[in-house]
Length: 294
Image (tube, rainbow, N blue to C red):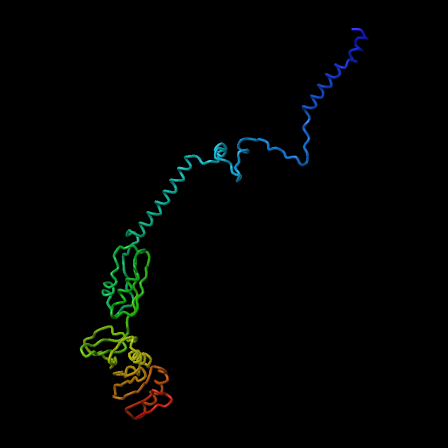
């Protein structure tokens, strides 16, 4: 090709336009479109596990299954068996402890009794042999033993693993009461609790129309007998009263003491001790400030 022909081809418009077009297309393929500051970028699609999220931020069941977070069937069955065995174990323990004799009553111990025999206490208690200590009704046992005539208070307790302890507090007689047909012992609260065949020595007779713990006159007389010193009480052969404030004591030497009510027992006893050194048959200490002897 001659030099003139080459110069004509360089100056040809088609040759330059083809080159510029291919360059432009190449630059357009590599150039990224510019984003405006306020333009919203459309969300890209990533992997299926990341794109498929619910409105609450949790992945659906299919995504969890693919990533392995769902427990296997074997693990689920194992958990169910463990839960079932736990329930059965608890039920078995409850049955053994409450409905069998594994922790049942094997002995009963009675404490504090003297006048009331142990046999009477055991019979009244009626503690079921081999009954579970957990279901044993101690309140009913206490009520039954407390109904015995000579028993004042009862305390029933469990001594693990298999012993029931019954602690008894007996009534202490403060006098006796003659109904005209029978003789009965009376304690310091006015309870008539035991029949006796004959008059007991060393106890005063309560000469009252009636004896009952709810009777004010009975409470006044028994209150005086409890409050006075023992050496004076040993000298009293009878106590009587028409009202709660007119208690009269008769001593073993025939002397009469007008005691009045149950108040100021200590002071009245001191005044009476001085008055008894004087001659007389009637001693009035119902008003310890103005005692009299006649």
